[in-house]
Image (cartoon, rainbow, N blue to C red; front, side):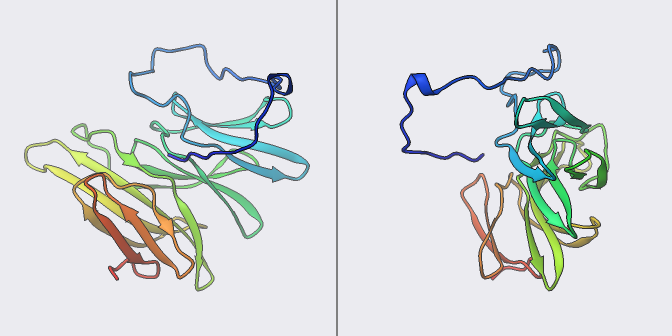
Length: 219
């Protein structure tokens, strides 16, 4: 999750409600402990319109017009989008990337809400637990746009017993796998990319990993 602090002080008279949205009146799919919205939205200007893009607990990704809150587009996900999406311009096209609890990273056209590609980290089985993803990060490596994210998958089947927290790098324009490494049996947090093209990621167990962006190998 992302948080921030501002020292700017507002008086009550300065705060006026510009607009509000209620994407759905249904609560049947809500479960205790869910985040109603993804951790943080992303904001992008496309042509003359500013969009606010965020995930909603009914397995949807929304884009709202920042001026009046109207829905510009909605995209159906196969799972819950808990973590903040990431936006990047690739070959002059606005991509928004988001992970969901269905083990998938989605790449969506931020202008139209159409799927560009998706990557399933583990094929579906009825013994799988909901996955735990992360906010992705995007970088350019040797001219190749690269999206890096984490995904934790768990399979409770007695003959498999899988628990894997992976760090994964894909081509951001096509979804092709560049590398993937299992780092932990526990969920991983969102990766941090340094200026020297190193990736730092922490695990829920307290471990800290530093990896090379080019190969994913330990440094």
